[in-house]
Length: 291
Image (cartoon, rainbow, N blue to C red; front, side, top):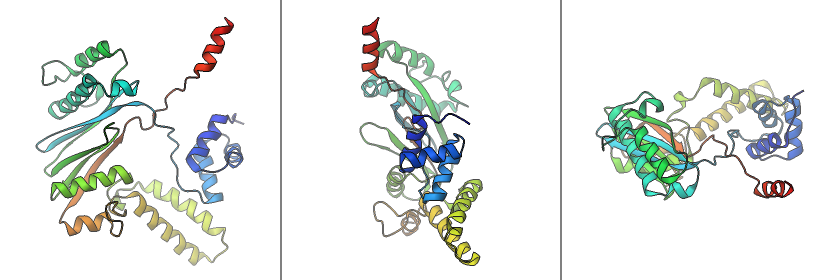
């Protein structure tokens, strides 16, 4: 039997919104497997799908660059929000985005060897900014889109912590509004045909188990499950979501009435999936006092 820690229980509670004891029991039943425990809770309680990636606490910014039919969205991380606002750090993030567009690197390691507009490599600029600011700074990830279609981008807020790069057909002001929607509503993909079939089958299993518990006939259960799946797909796909600017219509309807189409998008949130270490300064001071 795997040890069930308080942190595991807390993480599962944060993901599902259910009570501590329910979460602990599910973890015991799942022998410590977080994903299996979440599934158990969803079957038993009807809890909505959650994310077990943990709190997104890493600092940094997003930057983008678009040159003609090539665009890039880049995440650059640092240790504190103070450095994330520094002009040198922000300039490095922008230079990195422009280098991705110009150099078409295969990955983050290859990006380090690409020269910036000033003639220095991205890695050399990164080291210079580290030396100046005294914090570890890194390019975490990027995505580059080269297309015959149009490109636009939207970065949300002064902190530049969430953003999207959108490949589209039609008017840019329409695509930009949809980009704002993407940051707010966080769809996983454009349309239902792009959803991972394995993910759909997992949801279908959970909905079927829940519906079977109702005791209704098999044909009614099948209709209930199909309805839940359709609702689920509408919630996670861009085209199926209610448009945040006008919830009376879907994004697909908004695009159609404006003769536009979103082909693809890349959405990032700074620190997504990175768990930041929590420092207990009181404990450190107490321990030091005993020395």
